[in-house]
Length: 217
Image 1 (cartoon, rainbow, N blue to C red):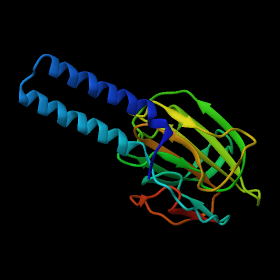
Image 2 (cartoon, rainbow, N blue to C red; image 1 turned 90 degrees about the vertical axis):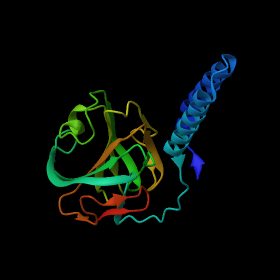
Image 3 (tube, helix red, strand yellow; image 1 turned 60 degrees about the vertical axis):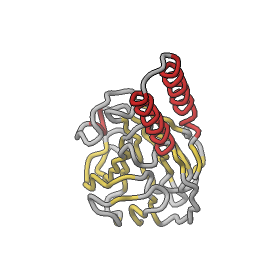
């Protein structure tokens, strides 16, 4: 387990806040109840940041015949839908909701070349809102594998998630299971798969990024 690089600034701000608040309490000689409250609050804030930005080390067994889960969380959508940004036809959508307690590293679901990338500014509707996939701040990534199959996946900001980070661009060669981005403080990732793809998960399943098999070709 390691601490993710995206959390360094947040951790530094929390440590600074803890130091300043406790120094003020000592300077004004606050009573023991106030000091213990601040100690508990400080520990809670510190542990919250550390757990949120944790980044487990993973050994990924590469397999071109499967779609790996791109994020930790819970499966909230499995349905056929129109994908109107890139494919402009029907696709099989699988959506994973990430709560603030989940690991927020986003991983490539398959190996290949990034054939399309776009960042969309937008709203911050709650992640389970029906229009969050099209109206919220988001990124769209399409990867084409060695067999010519393309899979689209989106990072979608939510009501709490106000920063999407990505590490890919068009033309990049990516490897299954490697990090392609990070979303701060809870949101969701959508996958758009070819119609007929065999899905290995069900709505409500808890899934693990880089480990759970979402679907098979």
